[in-house]
Length: 169
Image: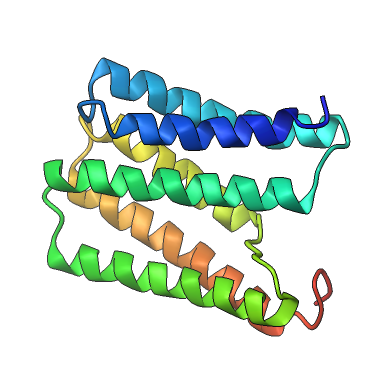
């Protein structure tokens, strides 16, 4: 039971990689995609309920999230008409996130990604994107995602810049 949350996070990496072999927005894509989303919810829940949370588990969860987002960008980018403004915005969000990770690495000598409510909301909005894509204008969805992701990335960067020691503001 102690390793179950980490196994679930690891499975998200495997399922995310499986997405590469599906047609975007197909039944197989959505099935695997929902499994990935469910695993993202359940791994942390199980870890907290069984008191098996760990820094390795938090890192594994963040890495699995990043891999999933990267693969989704790779798969969905070619089928949506993203403006150059949105592409630049996404790159800026990535730079902010990488800067935050770099600052944490320098401060704590380890990978650290904070699980803030802003990051959770950004994750939910990002997760809903492929599901809502057939029903809502792509540009509107992209602006919503970029606004929410920008706020959460800036929030995390501010926390990493202002926190003195790991876990202490």
